[in-house]
Image (cartoon, rainbow, N blue to C red; front, side, top):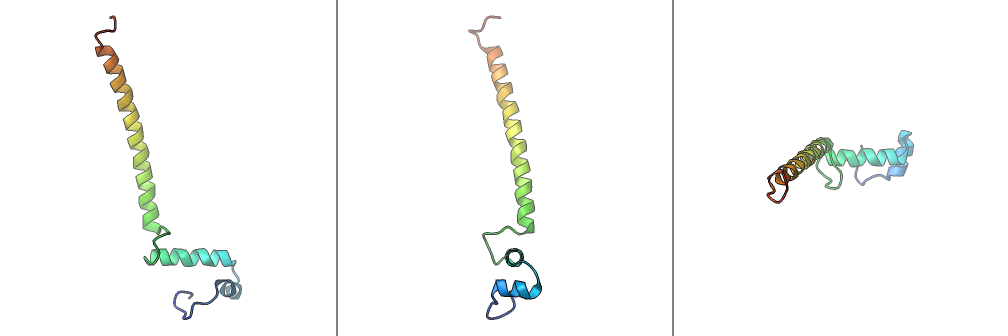
Length: 85
C-alpha cells in the first residue's frame, strides 16, 4: 500500500491508521523494497540464505585449514634432520 501510493504517505500516520507500530511498518516496507530489488542496503530472503551458506562454508574451510596446518607442522617435525630420533 505504501509503495503504490503517490505521494508517499507518512509512515507514522499510516501505521496509526493500520494499528501497528511505525517501526514495524518501516521494517516491512524496507523488506518489501529489498525483495523487489529496490534497495541495495538490505538483504532479501535469497541473499540471507546465501550469506548463511557462505558463512557455514567459510567455517568449514577454516577448520580444514587448521587441520592441514597441524598436520603440516607434525610431518615437518618428523622429517627434520636436526631432530634426534
